[in-house]
Image (cartoon, rainbow, N blue to C red):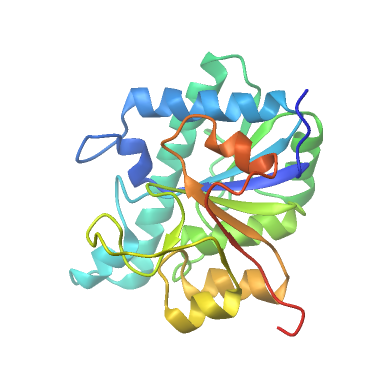
Length: 242
């Protein structure tokens, strides 16, 4: 077994990541790819919680900008995350990974209601735990939900899987002169308004001194490398005087 730097991790994946090269929805091959990456992580003896966004189906803030009531739009977005979580659960179970979906919005016929002690119990039994429906409250993103759940399960680190190999000063997919950061503090992220996570998520991580790793999820093995201490992306953490 390869030594790993972290025993328990919270992995955040965007809903858009599940689209693969499609323009909308869930791509089965991408689901299978992520499931295989999670399986490799579990094989190292790492306990893993997972939060998935819903941008591939419905984004609450986009609905609000189109004239919908923000709370109603966010509720729709939270329900959309449940669809992604159930799809991921199915992909994991197809490769014999024991998995549970815990939803912040109770829906007993399709998944378990979220409870902190229940989540920890599943993790300690070696199951992958997928946290659905965000925080269960409107006006909070799945980034904030990821940090919140990471704190509640006492994860050693928050892992943010993206389409690029870390945090840049501007979008590297648009700007060829974008500069990558190997390390950042929470304060630098907030001051520079870097769009790695929303300000509420970064502030919550800062206030609780929770390290965030940002890396490219499209490179096979990157998640496991990050968990084993190889800095293949950007690490966000505090300074002693923060």
